Structure formats: C-alpha cells, structure tokens
Image (tube, rainbow, N blue to C red; front, side, top):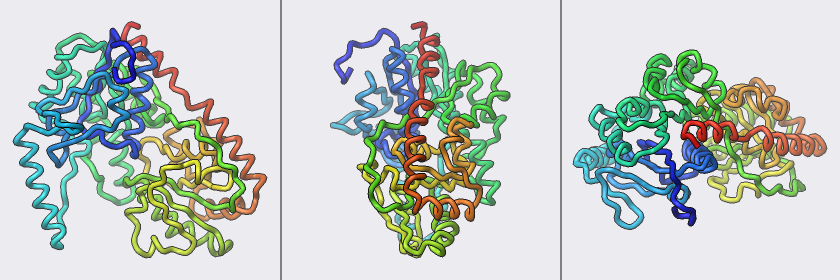
Length: 414
C-alpha cells in the first residue's frame, strides 16, 4: 500500500461511477470519511470504477492523491493508465465526448441547450454486469455501492461477501425538495420506494444524513442503518481579534447556490439597513453562480476558493447557513463549528444532523430572524466567543464514527 503498511488480509471493494479527481466537494469529502473508517476497521480499500459511467463526458480521468493514498488498489476496467491519467478504451465514451463537444460549441454560439444529467440514473444492465464482474475478479469481504443507482450491482455479485451502500444523498428526497420549491430536479427523478428497491440487496446502509436515515428505515427493514457523521479537521483556532464579519462557505451545487443567492438578495439587505458597515465574506466555488449585481452587492466580499480556512475562522466570523433546499447533510455547519465560528442556520441546514447539533447552533427560521441574529452578534464580542468555544468543543465530541468502524469490523468478520 502507498503508506507503507502491509497488504491487509480483508478488503472492502468500493464501487463508484464518477470521477474522483477532486476533494473540494461534499461527495468527495464524505467518500473519504467513509474510506478512513474502513481503514480504521482494519480493512484494505479497493476502488472499482464503472467502466463507462465513471468517465462522465470526457474519455479520461485522474484520481485525487487522497484517494490513491488510502487505496491499496484501483480497478478501472476498459481503460489504460498513462502517467497519472486513466484513458477510456470504450467507443461509447469517446462518442459521448464528441457529442458533448458539439453541444458546448452550440451553447457558446448562443443556442440554449438543456444537457441531460446522468446524476442518479442507474447503469445500463450491461455496464452493471461488467462492474459486478470487475468486483468479483478481486474478492472482498465487503462490497459497497456508492449511491443508490449502483445498488442493483450488488445483486449481480457472484462471490460471497457482505453488501453495503453508502448514501451521500437520497435522490428521491432531493427531487422532492426541488419540486417543493417549484423547480425541476437537476438529476434523475425517482420516488423513495423506487430508490429503496435499488438498494434492496444491501445488508447495511450507511447514510450521510441522519434525517434521510430515519426516512429510509421503514422502507428498508431488512438492512442495518448507520449514520456516517461528517468528519471535520481539528482546525487551528484563529485569534478572533479582527473586526467581526459574517461568512458564507459553500461549494458549487444547487443547494448552496440557492442559499447564497437568498442570503445576498433577501437577508443581507436587512442587515445593512441597520448595520451599514457590516461585511459578508463569501468563500468557495458557490460564488461562481452569482449574478453581477450579487457579486457587487454592498458589503459583500467575494473570496472564491480559500485554501487556508482557519484564516477566516474564529470568533470574529459568524458562519451563515440559510439553507432552503435539503440535500444530504450541510457540512458547512460542522465546518463553521470546528473553525470556532458562532453559527446561525435555518432549520433545514440542521436536518441532516438529526438533533445532534441543535444546542450548538443559533437557529433562525427565515430572513428577518437571521438578519436579527447577525445584527445582534456582530457587536457582541463576548457572545461570539462563548458560542465559538461551545460549538468547537461540542462538535468534536459528537461527530465521531466509531459506530461505522464497529459495523465494518463485524461485517468483515474481523
């Protein structure tokens, strides 16, 4: 293995159908949290890619070093590795790439095209069988499908193993959240009953969101259900002596984009009316979806991607999570707390944590309530420091994944 350890006697095969070239998004972070738990359980990690879906719309992919460092083996069927990249040998992938290039050319020429997303869509029967065969060729004690659309692959496995599914998001609940806001889902649309059927072959279901676990439990009575808590680093604590400011952290996805736009359009003007000098720092790729007017809103400082998160943390920063579209768990809330930021959040942002963090976060239900709390906290240094200490220490204790480690040990016979 890459870290010098001996090759383990037992393995977990992780079935994936996407590129793993980034660690800046929630799905990459959650997969890594799970794989670290696998290693803690004494199992080796083998990542097995779906032969065509994993390439997306381009015929090559690279793998982020964090994934290669934690994995003993990488299995990428129908590809060849050249340097740090895997190149597809499938004519289907190259054909899809050619079509996508044409679509992009038309889009840049001004034609409005709606490009179908494959997010959440099951593999074809042929590709599912090929992925199962690739996993069987490298026997494992546990085989885990990432996301429900890969769940049907588990029923095609021929070698004996325990079967699990890692559910970052339930696509059925994600779709319902979009429809509730009058928006079309940005992925394959399914019901919760259909999604439960996809993972019916799994013995164990691991959820990134506590409320999604509770929703799915009665639909999957034959499986064990475990919550994978977000794992946030023990960030160094900023000194907190800078002028107070509000902060929004967020990667680029629909839930974060909606929350950020709502914050700038509906909440921030209420703050500036009463505190004209108030400053809002926006960090992360979510800002790439803002309009020119939002980018230049009074008091808003666009920072983009920030590599040194502790530099914007501490008691001087008030972390905001005005989440309205539920999708898995809002990792930003955990990051705010571990960065020592007092946190103000809408109830939706806490749903993924169950009630685990309710007493560590200032819950505000609506734009006016959030604006009121921001205005109250900005000048209150003692309150910000108290909330900073409470959240930082409380989150460290409550966000631990020993339950997942124990379940993996039991499943593998360790």
